[in-house]
Image (cartoon, rainbow, N blue to C red; front, side, top):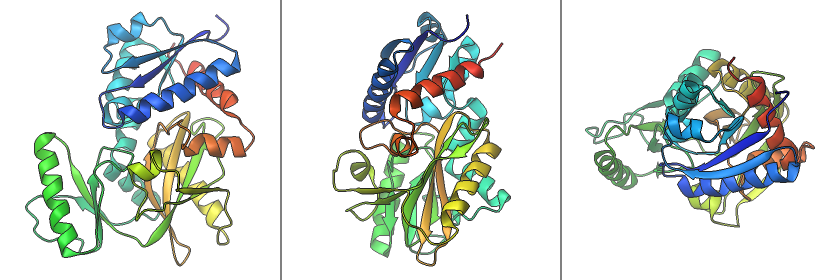
Length: 312
């Protein structure tokens, strides 16, 4: 076989971002159909087994699942056991990048600025980092479970909400992160372990207090500026830092690295997203299109990367 013919796009999954995944997977499916290069099928899944994956008879699978199961290692373990070519991280890189504290540890080791952070302990009646802080799950995306705490009252309510959520979801871990007064920038990285290149940065301006789930996926008043004017050296700094970090983590094929830009022009790494969204609001395809790669070309290139990197 000279190249992949049958491509299966997966959507859904068991995580909190299931609805986003359904929309993203439809976007990837539509792009692959428009490319005209493959026999494409979209399948909605929950927690597919190794047998389920093998039964799909795919040359390449594009798992557009967001959250701990779909992009945090468990699904990738099953792809490896099934010896199926797939888009995105391998299991180890997936686990590292899904873990916000592990990602920060990598950034600290590489000399990439990132805000102070610690594991949340429900027994702390005051924040060990002081205020203001952000309380958020270590292994979730799309701002699920995020609380901004600028006052003692907000800290108390966030602490109670996190404690309740941890009881409802055994094993879930929360973290505290020093809140930086800043705007948000994101940088997509294309083929990190190959001919890595950074896509144009995007400046995010939500109409709400912060870039939460609704601002990302439901509201139409969030303003996105692709390749915005930035202070001297910032674009180059965040682009090089993004590539350096994800290469070190072992991320492959695609990802997005989020940064905070403070008022003095300092850029702080926030987190890594190894399966960016492909909805109408999503930033990775916006940046790629701005750089001259429309969606059909982008998603077909990802399929070819997965085929290139498949196991013997």
